[in-house]
Image (tube, rainbow, N blue to C red):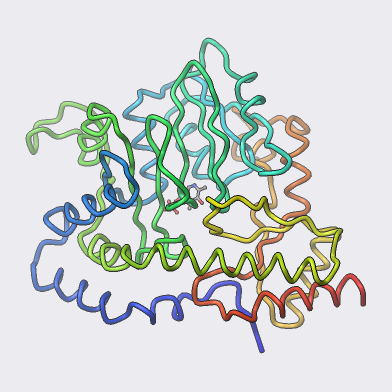
Length: 355
Ligand SMILES: *Cc1c(COP(=O)(O)O)cnc(C)c1O
């Protein structure tokens, strides 16, 4: 039997009636932008995450961009971050004309190494941006500037500790919309106010523009769907953790010591279950041939990305991130995954190595 990497329909099926009702309510209301659905979701999200302010945005990418704009990132300033992340983290820096400075990852956690980040801080550095990768919190760096968290993959992994955090509700994230959506979390009332202003073209009041922002708004339909799904998040996170425990147990009993497992942290929310494996590409082909879907997050460290050639192209600068890119493999992991899937996936992996 096939084990797809992700199964959108199966996840949605468990809450389909609530989601249908939420969408119908928005259609009946005639209010599609802003309004009570968005405000209600923002209140529920703040309560769930422990943030003082939760501000819905059009995507996780726009949440990061709005944070950078609100903090005044501009040409000449530097933001220190990890090269082992999704491109949006760095895009938010570069699109504002600021310079991303890459510091290497911690070899165990695969998240930004706080010591390397600290060492990369200069007098031009305005922020350090750790990424809570695959659902595992990055260590909080102690630095004389702002810490902005890319928490796109880590809702539920603990409260934000930086000045602001960005969440993504891309459909496959731990809390997924039925389209693009995201949020900014912060405890700072001035920063929250600035993000709200920038989210609607800097208009205050309407059609009186006091800042250049953008359209970073969360749709009412997405807000209503997210509000319907939010009460299930804790249960889904528990399901992810149980699957992770099954993977671990299966790897131990298979004696596959050449495969490195993700850090076993009680706060891990397992957006992905990412192993590091020798002969990764051939293993991936083998698993595909027996019907098991996998992904490589991420195959290219961002300091090797041609898109950043003019700003931060430094081949060889972050050897731990480079090594991770050649070895990482994300195995099937989502709340609707069958309980015996981890054993079957690990059996197939053992088949590859032990033939
Ligand atoms: C998904 C993701 C984003 C961007 O979120 P979108 O909602 O897809 O724009 C940013 N950073 C990381 C680490 C992500 O995984």
